[in-house]
Image (cartoon, rainbow, N blue to C red; front, side, top):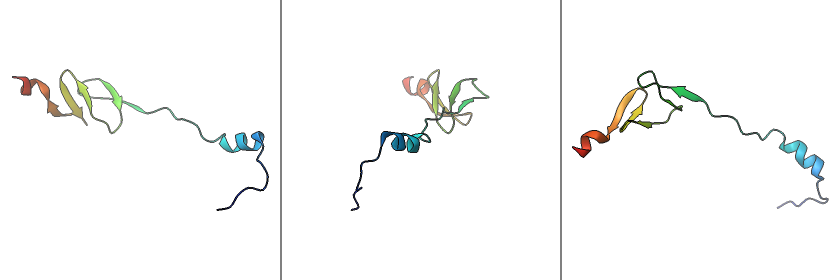
Length: 64
């Protein structure tokens, strides 16, 4: 493996790292429930798991 001949200064290192930023995640609002959730993620609301506006898992039926 290649090794650097000289130590890189903190200024050069920080200049390179300026582009590594955390971006805010996009939040969607469900049309059916009105609940805010992350895009492309299923979410729980009142004992039911929703994905793209449809019920995927219903825990209330399983408990009966």
